[in-house]
Image (cartoon, rainbow, N blue to C red; front, side, top):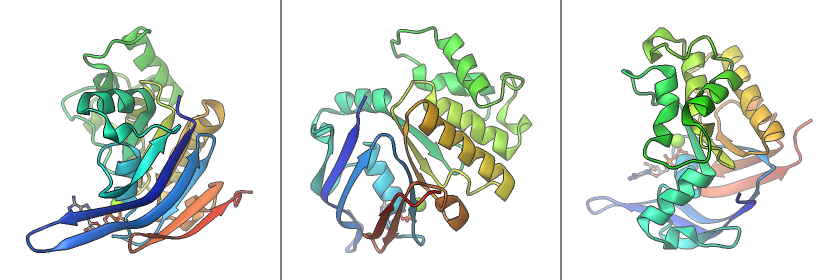
Length: 230
Ligand code: ADP
Ligand code: MG
């Protein structure tokens, strides 16, 4: 259970044909597991890049990221994948559910070929209940509303009991009220399960409810306000 993630002098650049985009510049940040953090900033400011680095999906071009002092990204691919399975849950704007699988089958996918000390089916049912979808376990994504699909995606993100939840514009495709309910669910996971939550949003009203707001522009952290929530 990782308690603290530290980014030091993190830079990320992408090389194209003859071009180089610097997506993150000299980012220094520390995250504690109890925090509920919003990341805001205009499109192209590096928010998604930052989440993918924190979630070990990609590596910094310069600088380093430590997880309770350990530089996980220096390890082998399979060690990194194990770490991600242990610690990280991802939620995306587009839900990314598999259309031919039912809700419960989608939730089970992260556990496929993993050895876990609990009953997989029971655990999948438990998390679907947690997100209020006990009646929709056998529905296909096409039979669910956007809010319900995002709930399935959240259940899938927490089924393996990660300590950190990284959500990239999780309410971006939802109406305001549904978005607020998704937000409340993330807040519950932060308060009750103790998951560290980092979420990217364009919605200033949702960001304002976080207890920390990191604002980015052109790959740079331009402000970092802690203790802003009521
Ligand atoms: P945001 O999520 O804030 O909209 P991103 O992190 O997606 O911003 O992108 C930051 C910058 O990095 C943008 O200029 C984007 O075009 C560039 N970028 C992101 N991912 C890649 C990639 N895989 N290849 C090339 N450029 C990328
Ligand atoms: Mg993005």
